[in-house]
Length: 104
Length: 346
Length: 169
Image (cartoon, rainbow over all chains, first blue to last red; front, side, top):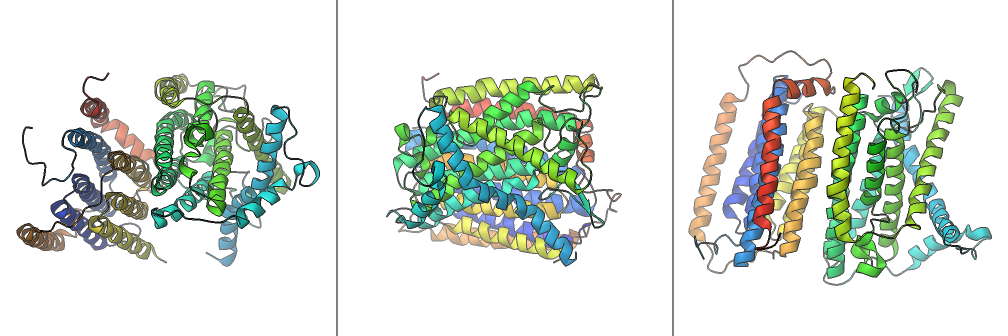
């Protein structure tokens, strides 16, 4: 139970739902950028779970961990999108089913 | 929370918003007559004495124009974009203190919309969201000039946001708090005793310049208005907008100018404080509101003055200025403020 | 209106828009749905007494990372996904099975470990105060903080090196 009266079960349920939706997106979409978006959603679901526990256990370490996770996600998004841009220049498509050659 | 508490809270939030919406037509008149003054021509002088009813005529024009939505546009995003821009512009004012704390009837009412602990970070968050209004307007218009204008404008905003927040970080460092009420109160002390408790513009002049210049870029005003310049991109991201939706973009731009001025006044020019003046009672609070209003008006006039004086930057010059000049200057300012804090001057 | 009700409403909104993101065919609309979802999550973070993380979520995640996604989508002019005619029934069934199994496993884990056995630490005097968090960040975690700044520099240089055209400065 967090100080604001939110039971940890609510937080975990929301986190699980978001993570599962993100997983569904990552497995079922064909567009590389949509897959990447679903991965970002999964990271946010994890952030939510960490913050839920940080709040329930009255710990500030959880907030610091989430701070680092968000910053790392930013770095990862930048590099990932640069990769997609470079890929698109070569293959003219972002459909992951069509990008199936190791060298072209 | 009693009804009286709720009423007071609502009034605290709505009062500046209503004042801004009422002042908006007058600002437009000031801008056009001021432009005439600077360019040695009369400005609007047909409608009413000194053209004072010109804003009214403009409002009537906006209402009566055909409100068309081009085909092949994404209707939902097209209609949402101006609303989003105006909403973001109005919400930013919620954390700016516009007067001293009023103690009346056993309550102490801080004259600010919401005195949250993350104060200025809320403001930067809402500015980040206002980028979406512009990007959506540019993209949903189904027009390559709008798209280029929208993307250029949002790239400009996120680039200058860095310099702006780093300059503001210097102020946060010297005040020791994100809350703008704290920042203003700490500028209301003595200018001549150590630790320095006067306006932040004196020890952090470089930061002030960086912040003010970045505010021009954030609000898409000349000399940084390439994304919406007529000679370059028709009208940039609001090319395809007419009548009321265009009026909303126009309003959003003026409200952004007022908010940027108010923020500069709060961070660097002492907010509602005046050296050697401590507000007491209702009269003191009213005087503090007046002081704040005067300072904001001076800065808004400077915004307009610069608009009709300087030529605009080319896009690559604009980006170069933001990244290679203002950001390093803001970082140097941060080091300087940290050094001052270490030497116990601040 | 209690905090719990507000939190549940915010989470419902976040989950709804996350669903919209996953289902919508056009990637730009997906990104916008995700922006709303992240904003709702930030509201949830405020209710979990983490206002700084909520502000950082909106500024960094919703306001910078997703804007970057939008730029890339608009500049590459990525089209909406069209339903493939031969379909991929094996892929779809296996994915659905994996997702359902994973969700069941996750719920089972949360049911048994939901209530932590560790005792809660001391109640913070003022959850809205940001000073203790800042002190902790810059004393115990200063090494991670500095390493993070080097990581961001590496990401900056890497992104620039990957995305530039061949032979241009």
